[in-house]
Image 1 (cartoon, rainbow, N blue to C red):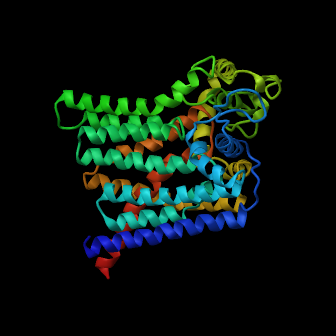
Image 2: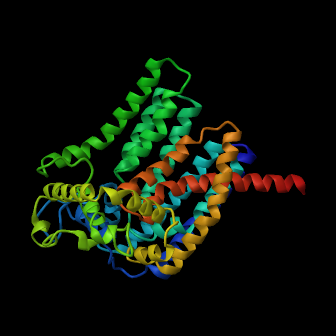
Image 3: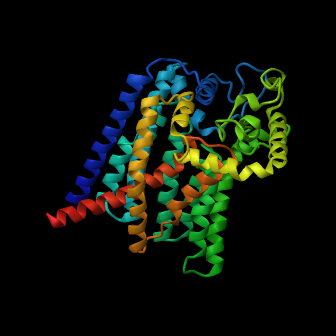
Length: 417
């Protein structure tokens, strides 16, 4: 390595150490209790323990198979449970390691997008300190791996842009499939980020379509073991999880359309008996029933949908009643001071991100792959409900674009000085 490259990797290592320190410090101050009280985090922690104990993807309380969420988070924590038993603290500390890897991957993505070590180091520093990233890493949720894998996926897409070939197309598809096993909707980011890029390459159409086909094949092959595994366990097909119906029914009822606090998710929307007899039934069947009820409600209130969808999207993007969102996210393990820190830092980064997007366009660099995360986050929020966690894929884009602008500002000040 040249001295310049050595210096880059040394500085990136220091940033990684800072990121790990921040995350472990947050866990030490706010998350040291060896308890999980919140539903999604509880599911991931318990399922990791179940896998370690030889009862993979089974409900601990009910005699039925479990696929309530995509499987990658609990699989990634199974070794921790195998070594440390039912210690949730150990799982949280491992999440901090995954979050640190996410910071490094964001830095490498920024380096590939902007072609600049300076931009990469700024992206890593921002990601290390950004509350909306380290707060998620202190809780056992899918967002930690989502950030890591979305950054890796976009890194692969930009690698394909720079050198389009079959091997890089396969890598894009494989990472998209892997990311979908963390959060299902990330598969759509893979499609939206890669398909326009592949189709616009200056190559014969046969090669363009071939690259798309290879990416799709790789994604399917990564998803196939989980999907096939579920074929014999459930009555109805389960591609990734049995959670979409539950998500939809909790967001489509009177309290989430016409109350004083709309656009969220409410357990009271579920039909009577949902947490008694329904818990013991085949969850693919229950999920289909919930999905049907939610769609019927939405159809009966189609006139309200534009307003409700707008509120959902505004909530996700911190444009609607931030105090309400901070209270709501407290139920998911994000303390109010952390929530406000995330809100303020988000709006500090937004103008820098806009400026960074303009700068990249002026330099002739494709920005659509980065912007695809924003499109998907907005679409998911409109269809389901407003939640800051849904914004996780777009936080990667926000950090990278903001770093471009910060590095440019630093360069101009250096020249002026």
